Length: 186
Length: 333
Image (cartoon, each protein chain N blue to C red):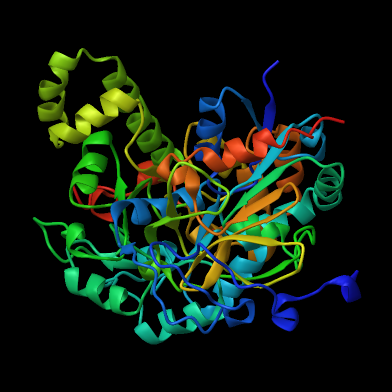
């Protein structure tokens, strides 16, 4: 049976992630309610507005179920606002502190090619939209890539978080990475 | 847990290799903010412009005229705010020329919130757009809600680094705007009425025309482009992909959580709410409820709960009873 990847769909760029997930032969499931987190092989927390997502996670009682999903060892990919959701100040599962809108307003959004350590096949085409960066990271956190000296891609166990949007460039290797960690099902 | 956290900033562990694009930087970990090397990058590309609209999907963009309103909108879950001089309902009531918002107000709104700040410019008024770009707003709305500045030409949006959203009543109009450089489209509806009927008409029409192009024989696309008065390349793209080339939101007359959920079910990718929030009895509560209904648009029980106890909606006008010169949607073409 093909694996099922949940995509948090409270708000933001969840559809582009669904396309990538399906292109890898996995099932994509939009997650808006706690029960939709059950039986997932991996989870993607997409980009969007982190304030909206924070309110939605609170309103819909998703914080605790999301933390439990991480504790059970389900691999998670967070992109942009998704990275912020995982950090110390939000879900508190990824030992980093992030800086929101760190590169500035939309006029300073950009795309670039980025080498990520441990990811074969050449640089990732990375789209940064009003993106955050990692300000501080804990010792268990591995920095995979940086821009202007600021970490923008990190990994801690089965959590992978990037400040950019691989899904907007049709980049599927990060999704493959979390799917390959396969420790999801209870 | 707290004491176990070994912060890099304190530990100064091994240098980081293989970082930052083509340059190999050996920044010490605590030096994150000190690196002088700039990673090469491309700004203001169409991917970056349309990308912000992708991130607004499933969200509610709220009209605000003051920093206080912007803060209320942000706290209620707005994905972005739209700064304008007066909300459409007041423009209708007071008349006169409606223009871009005062830069002082736009700056104050930018300082009040961390979510994207959009602002409206008059149709064809490229200098208002230049001013908004200089203020670093996140999106410019070339809007029929303001009084048009040019009867023949829309703004050449390719000339700008800031992205644009434009209104449309049908597919041809949407593709003309995209051809001019718009990176996001909103169906126009009839702003400031609280009547959703025009929004539904425009959204249904755009979606129907997109579906039709998906079914048309490729050899008939040039004729379709002529009928739509739209660039052939964009018509071909819609035919091939079966969707608009950019994100499609719905605007104009939305006043309730059920209105927002209805247009989402009809295929809108997000909503703009103008007068509907700050002209209602309890803006904060209504704003939260519309956000909730936009996320859970397919869940009638949630929409019912969100619709409960909101107080009075905005004072509404039936669009079909408006005189032709009172209509905003025919502005732009």
